[in-house]
Amino acid sequence: MAFDEQELIQIRRHLHQIPELALEEHETHAYLLKLVKELQTDFIELREPAKLPTALLVLVKGTAPTKTVGYRTDIDALPVSEETGLPYASTHPGVMHACGHDIHMTVALGVLSYFSAHQPKDNLLFFFQPAEESEAGGKRAYEAGIFSGKWKPDEFFGLHDNPDLPAGAIGCRMGTLFAGTTEVNIDIEGKSGHAAFPQTANDAVVAMASLITQLQTIVSRNIDPIQSGVLTLGKVEAGTIRNVIAGHARIEGTIRGLTQEMIEHIDERIKQLCAGLELGFGVKVNLSLNQGGYWPVENEPRRTREFIDYMQSAPDVNFIETPPAMTGEDFGYLLAKFPGTMFWLGVEDDAQLHSAKLTPNEDAIARGVTAITGFLVAHMNQEEN
View: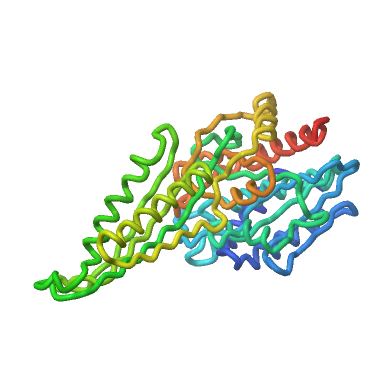
C-alpha cells in the first residue's frame, strides 16, 4: 500500500510536531517504525541497530538484484523555538524541524511506500539517520559497522530541502553540492601581569590579535581565487579587567571548503601560523581542528550525470542546476565511503533553513516522491551497474 499525497502531508505534520535533537529521536523513531511496519511485506526487512538505537534501516529486496541502492534521510531537529504559528507547530518547547528534516523523512516514506507496492528490481536500503545537525550520525553509523553484509549499499542517494527553489523542483550539480566544515578552537597561553608593567608579562591579547590578522590571509593569499574557501572566527575571549594583562586568550571559528583537499590545506596553514606565533611571541598555542563527519558533499560523477540527465528529461520534473553551497551536511562523509549523489528538493519559502519561521510548501512532497521513484526505477534498469 503506497501512501497518497494527503496521507503524506498528515505524516509530515505529525513529524513536525515531535522534533527531537541529535541522538534523542526516540519518539520519531517509534513513529517511523510504526509507519514502516504498516508497509512491510515479505520482501521488506527492518533493522534497529543496537549501536545507534534511534536509527532505522529498511531493506527492500529486489526481484533480480545486481546491486543495493542506498537512500538516506536524516531525522533529527534543531534547538530552535518555533515561530510559525502553525496549528501543527512543534509540541516540544525549544526544538523545531527548522531544517526541514520532517520533509526529508516524509519523502523517504513516500518513496519506500511506492516500492512496498511495486517491488524493485535491485535491492533498496533506506537509512533513517539520526544526528545530522550535530554528533555526525553518518560517521557514527559507518564506524559502528552497520553497513555490512546485506545491509551494505553499493551507492547512496539523498536529498536536502531548499526554500529558494520552487516547490517540487529538483536541484543538483556535478561536483560539490555542500561544503565540508571544521571547527577551529585555539587557546593561547601567555603570562598575566599588571597593565603598568608589560615587560614582566606576556600579553595573550596582543598575540591573539596578530594571529587573527594572519589567519585572515589564508583564504585571500593561500587559496586559488577561482576556488572557494571560508575561515570565519566568530568568537574570541580574553582578559578579566582593563588593568590586567591577559595571560590566556581563546579563538573559536569555522572552516568551510568545497573539497576535502581544500579543507586540509587550510588546516595545514593554520597549524603553521600557530607554530609561528609560538616562536614570534613566546606563547604556547593549543590548536584543535575538529571536522568529525562533516566532509564536503562531493557528488560522484557517473551517477550524478545519470541523475541530472534523467531529471532534465523527465516531463514532470522541474530541474534546476544549482551552485555549490557553503552550508555543511554530514552526508558528505558517507559519500566519501560510498559513491552517490545528493540533490535539492525545492520547498519554496521566504524563510531560510534553520529559521524559526521556516514553513516548507507541502506541494513539494508528492512531486519529490514522483521524481525520485521515477529516477530509481530508471537507474535500476540501466544496463551498466
